[in-house]
Amino acid sequence: MSESKRDNHAKDGIIDFTAGFLGGIALVYVGQPLDTVKVKMQTFPSLYNNMIDCFMKTLRADGIYRGLYAGTVPALAANITENSVLFLCYGFCQKFIQKVSYTEHVADLSMMQNATAGFLASFFSSVAICPTELLKCKLQAMFETQKQQEMQGFKVVRVGPMKLAAQILKTEGPLGFFHGLVPTLVREMPGYFFFFGTYEGTRTLLARPGESKDDIGLFKTMVAGALGGMSFWTLTYPVDVAKSRIQVTNSKMNMVAMILQISRREGFRQLYNGLTPTLVRTIPSTATLFATYEYSKRFLHQIF
Ligand SMILES: *[C@@H]1O[C@H](CO)[C@@H](O)[C@H](O)[C@H]1NC(C)=O
Ligand SMILES: *[C@@H]1O[C@H](CO)[C@@H](O)[C@H](O)[C@H]1NC(C)=O
Image (cartoon, rainbow, N blue to C red):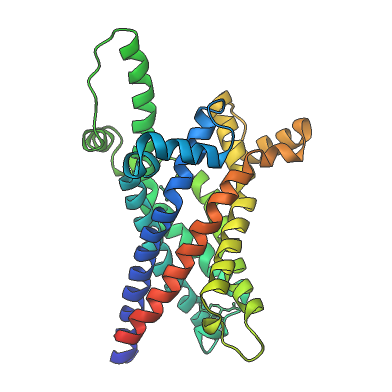
């Protein structure tokens, strides 16, 4: 490999990483208020008539920062990690697939090949966020039980993320941080296949004859991003439903068996119960993610 080619790989990698990093930030600023609304409506369904009502009541009661944007810091940390690694690896996996399939340019990759690059890239982003997601879930569960103990009059010592991380390291070793990785991969990897496949495919469809996909403009880029996000959730939602059902009922069933059981006993629609708020949230978030990624990538390639 020539020196300049290696430089280009490094440069492309840094640009993809940075574009994903900025995309992750933008996604949280757009998505967080909708996330807050969704969680509040799930937790206190009787308090709000609909999403707009919940949004307005939260805004009036707690304002923007402490209300709608509560919990932004951990969401930012997770999304920045996830998307910088995802887009960095997406670029590298595209180059890898281009090499092994003897395709001349990355731009000549087919939709299937791009989807496969997304599928592979999501392995690395899932590994990257696994430890922090695990800490988040454990801290949330601990917080809930401690609240109950306190209400019963017990004194409890609160444990922070650092202390919990040290405990896990001591009792289970480094691999302790990767508990639950396999079910996450089972959900995320096929999801990202369709995420990137739909995104790239839609961009191709929306380009006018003779026009490059990179010139379709902001609006069409956002439409493609929104559709990518929607196909991700439509595909992975039943797995999410089955996962919560297994957790809530303490069932020993595996994911596929649970999905089949729910659709047999309660109907196929039950697998998509509650999908709408998730889709409403993903449309602006994923549209923003891809728009920020594409435009900052282009900007960075122009100035370096
Ligand atoms: C990313 O941000 C969104 C919107 O704030 C949030 O719903 C989601 O949980 C975050 N992702 C992770 C992995 O925390
Ligand atoms: C695959 O991705 C590359 C780079 O993002 C893009 O140039 C190409 O047009 C995509 N192929 C299809 C068929 O969407």
